[in-house]
Length: 212
Ligand code: ADP
Ligand code: MG
Image 1 (cartoon, rainbow, N blue to C red):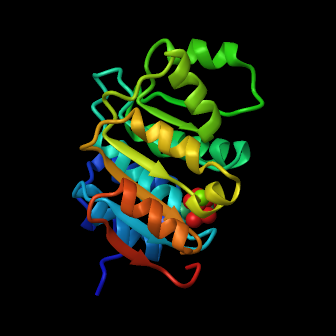
Image 2: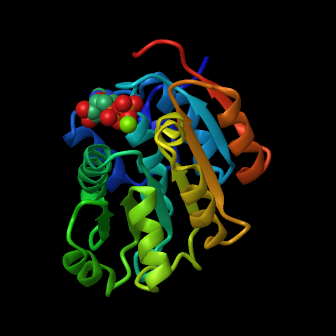
């Protein structure tokens, strides 16, 4: 039996208490299967439908592993659209209430560069963004991923459908080889298998059929 209690995870009392305050009583199936794997630092290839709780599945683990005292970008979440990136940032900020001083920055195309450049001056712990705009900041030198620990490809099938494959690969070239890479996708076409094989290291494979 997979454990569904958040208290079965190696989280701090503050983190568990914050989940309670958010009204998260038990883990959703994708969370129960993926959180133990992610917290162990392994790569993950997860297939799960929309609404299954994927953001907290990676978010809880990312936040737990941050070194808050270091103002360095330790986690990057790539999303297909601005709306999704903003949703992920909002959820990460709610999850981060348990961890004071955590900084999350959103970098999306179609938004002015000025505020993004300003927010990157004090390296945020977590960057969430769309591949094109993240690459633009890497090219300008306003973002560095040299200290990145974890890369998340969220809704990876949609990113590939939208033609972001080359941008994703260029972003990955700016990250350390020994990073953790988490890939979430609603479907599992051969392109996903191919990108997983080229950017992940022996990932644990997880499939969740239903929503909850
Ligand atoms: P997905 O990315 O899989 O589409 P989300 O991460 O956006 O799903 O989560 C969908 C909704 O479920 C969000 O409103 C989120 O706050 C809520 N949620 C996530 N995990 C839990 C949980 N363990 N208990 C209750 N609600 C949850
Ligand atoms: Mg999502």
